Length: 265
Length: 327
Ligand SMILES: Cc1cc2nc3c(=O)[nH]c(=O)nc-3n(C[C@H](O)[C@H](O)[C@H](O)COP(=O)(O)OP(=O)(O)OC[C@H]3O[C@@H](n4cnc5c(N)ncnc54)[C@H](O)[C@@H]3O)c2cc1C
Ligand SMILES: Nc1ncnc2c1ncn2[C@@H]1O[C@H](COP(=O)(O)O)[C@@H](O)[C@H]1O
Image (cartoon, rainbow over all chains, first blue to last red; front, side, top):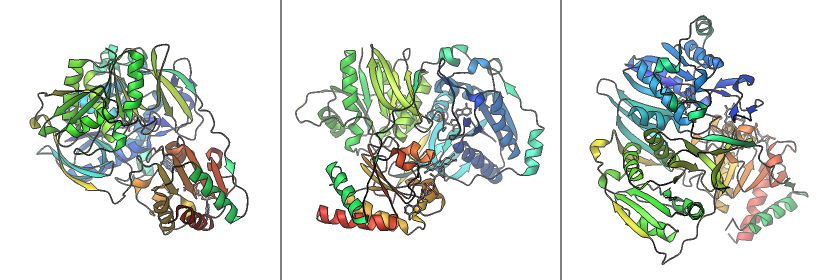
């Protein structure tokens, strides 16, 4: 019984962000990185699953050298093993290239029942990688999961709640599955000092394109069908207006301005 | 060639006008490419949805029906859509960047080995090249992407990014009824229940949102906001600080780790305007900020601001709107 959790390193949103404008990709080396917030929920859900069902957890991440930090963090939390997908040829991969590399790594780990992921990354913001990974592997796509009701590893069955527009859906599905989780599914724990110390000394295995048997036509900047051609700072909103006057006056002004917009009926 | 498909989403056959919103931009893009705008409708029975799609401007409707499609299930919908795509070869497919649109587009991308442009806020042609603009890093940057080589080009579009097309009676359109070889045994999942949320208004669809933050100071603050929201027909949003304080459930959270919304009017009450909050709402058409701190960053992006205590300002606003709306 194995579960995999996909963790991505993302720049801290507050950090200064630098782009390689030429290539249209982020200069990830120059930024203060964190684990993608949604992936912390994914790791926690994997840990909770292991506590309940006694499975092994493998964390994987694709990214530059520094991305090993997020794997070390996962090790400090006690996952059984990690793999760092690291190869210069992968840089600039689009979502499909990323999903393809992750899928191949999951295949290499083998006999995986559940792949936990975050519902989206806060830098790419696409939220499409989980669905792509599921489609590539032929696993059940279970996205936006807000609760896992039960897992039957032997019977290869899982029941989850999915938060969709207007409510939640209860879905009964076959394993293996990709489960992407939303905030609120759990409260991620923090690593303890002992865990951090132990993780600091551990070797992080690396997998290259060749190790994974990746078709080079499908990964990297040159293979990506989606390409960034321009990066700009959105034009600032026209300087807003602070309404002046006493309480009654400002409320009167605001109410009539808003009614003028003909949105409120 | 040059056809633009628009995926029409529904839940067990029920739609909202916004289900059809992309037919407007779809038509414009199709005209520029010398193709047709076509609706892709998958469901148990879709006659009504197909008819409405034509009223909203679809020139053709690909209608796929069958009991297997009663509920949206990503795996079978993906399989069915891929069969149609292979048969008809659309050039572009537009989806809304909702849970359903994201699921289906990512399933198709994974199966057909193509990229996706996700959550576009603008799509246009420039010198015959299709360009898509999306927000990155919480809207601090706009990134323009192209997807020249991929066919079809899959694009998910932020809800309400484009004008609603006009609905007209008597428009002509062709309905192409398709059957594909997909059955229940092709699905690895079964929807056993749907529990409607207690929240009556869907944040992503709402035209008006009244949002509360830590400045409310206590959970009861949301009672006041709810009264205001009900009066002006708004949905209720919240900052993460309010959600994490346990004052209101997560489904109300707006921002980087919550929902991305684009209402016509967003009223932020007692919210400072942290970058992660702005990420979820800065593309709103009109933003109103009510905050007692004149230096709160939210005022930098607000169309109208009131510096003051929300516990004084909001009751006063309620009074004004009651009078003006005759309620
Ligand atoms: C990885 C990450 C993800 C995040 N994701 C999100 C997200 O999705 N959404 C989100 O909202 N935040 C998110 N945050 C948190 C964000 O950084 C801020 O902490 C949060 O938005 C602050 O909420 P707030 O504005 O309600 O509270 P505060 O920043 O505390 O602001 C409260 C405001 O209320 C004003 N105020 C106080 N009393 C009154 C009164 N009586 N009348 C009027 N005004 C008053 C104050 O002047 C102040 O400006 C995220 C943070 C991180 C690190
Ligand atoms: N480079 C990556 N390495 C590991 N996991 C990733 C990577 N990119 C995306 N993911 C996973 O896919 C989820 C959704 O990401 P995205 O589709 O980029 O918004 C993330 O929360 C991760 O779990």
